[in-house]
Amino acid sequence: MRPALLRLAMRYTEDTDEAEDVIQEVLLKLWFLRGRLDRYRSIDSLAAVITKHLCINRKRDNRLELVGLEEGMGIFEEDTPEQELVREERMEELLALIGTLPDLQQAILRMKHVEGFEVEEIARLTGSNPVAVRTNLSRARKKVREQFLMKNKIWN
Image 1 (cartoon, rainbow, N blue to C red):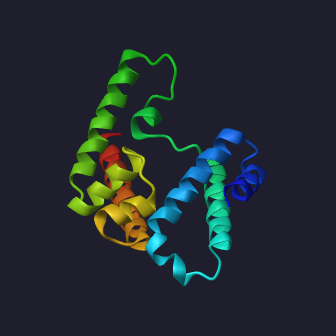
Image 2 (cartoon, rainbow, N blue to C red; image 1 turned 90 degrees about the vertical axis):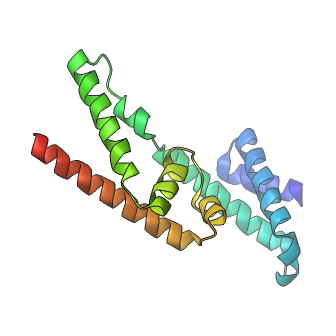
């Protein structure tokens, strides 16, 4: 099955190393599903679908190129000391706002943006489902954004 999956991944990724990474992830997912594989009509088809979805997700992630909080604040080159101070204060403010979130939202936000976990991994770790994780993540981001903007309107 591996050579066929590798060819499929190569069609999507056009990169041997990336395709190998995808196949490793597919095989790992199949391993975790091993107790439930008898529910599927064709394991080969299941593996192909998982491969396709992982490749598409990787392409999407590469296109979006997510930026962490610290990196996002450090985009500007040659900041003046005043700009550096403002950036540091805003970062501290963001981290403080994240600290005011409910425990679950705070943990999910940190796992996603600080530790880099995928939604499915977060769901597994928290004993939740991916939809609930996405909902909590969205609510946490919205709350932090609203509070940050409100504080900065007062300061400006």
